[in-house]
Amino acid sequence: MYGIADVWVGSQKDTGGVVVPQVSSTNVLESGGLSASRLGFKGTEDLGGGLSAVFGLEAGLTIDNGTAGGLSFNRQSYVGFAGGFGEVTFGKMWTSYDDIEAGAHSLFGGLDFAPEYAVMLSGRDYIGNPNNGFKYTSPDFGGISGSVSYALDETVGGNAEVTAFHIKYTGGPIYAGIAYQDEGTTGGLPNPEYIRANASYDFGVAQLLATYGNKKVGAAKTNEYALGVNVPVGPAVVVSAGYATSKDNAAAGSNKRTGFGLGATYALSKRTALYGAFTSADWKDGAGVKTNDISIWGVGVRHTF
Image (tube, rainbow, N blue to C red; front, side):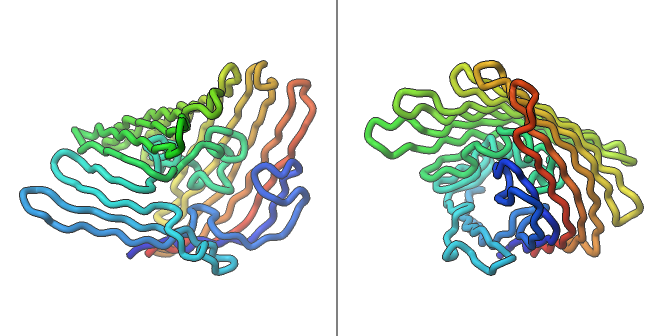
C-alpha cells in the first residue's frame, strides 16, 4: 500500500477559467499542490524461472473534501507480467508519453504551481491514462530504457486509439527523454498528436531543466518551451524558479502564452515536506490583446507513505 497526501492553502485567479476555476482572486484550500493526492496498492508474485505476476490499483484522492471518487481506481488499474524481458501490463495505465511529460524533470511537480502547466497546452489536455490499454516497458540497458503503450477505442468503426512511445536516458547527473503520442481520429478528423522532449543536468550546486513540446491537430500547431532551475540551499531546502512559453501558428490563431514561477520546498523528513510557491501567466491573442491572467500562490505540506 502506498500514497500521497498533499494539501495547500493560498489564492487562485484565472480570468479565462482555463487552468483553475476561479475567474477572480479567491482564497482556497486545495488538494495536490506538488503531487496529486492518491491511494494505491501494488504487488508482485514470483512465478519461478525469472517470471513474476504484477498488479496495481491506484485511486485519486482530494484531501480538501475527503472524497475519493467513490474509491474508483481512476488513476491506474492493471495486471501483467515482469521478467528479464521487461514488463507488460493490461488495463488502465499512464501512457508512455505521460511517463516523460510528467517525469521528475517538471518544475514544482508539473501541477498547479508549475509555469509550464499554466501555459503549455500539451502538458494539460492530452489523454494521460486511457482505458483499455496495453503497455510494454523495457529493461534498463546502461541507463537507456523505453516504453510503448496502446489503448483501444472499443467502438464500432472507432479510430480514436491512443498510441504512445518514449525513450529515455538516466545516468549520473543526466536525464534526457523524448516521447510521442497520437490520439487517432474522430469522425474522420484528426485528434491531437504530441511530442515532448525533456532534459536535466545536476551540477550539484544547481539542477538545470529544459523542455520542448509540440501539439498538432491537422494544420494547427503549437510550439512550447520551458526552462527551470532547482538550487539546494543547505541539506533540507530547495529553491526553484522557472519560465515557460507557448505559441500557436496562424492556423491555430497565433495565440501566445507566457508564465513564470518561484517556489521552495523544505524537507522535514524523507517523506514529509513543506512548500511555498507563486506562479503567474498571461495569455494573449494574435493581436497581442490579453485574454487570460493567471496567478496562483500558496503554502502546503506533502506526505508520502
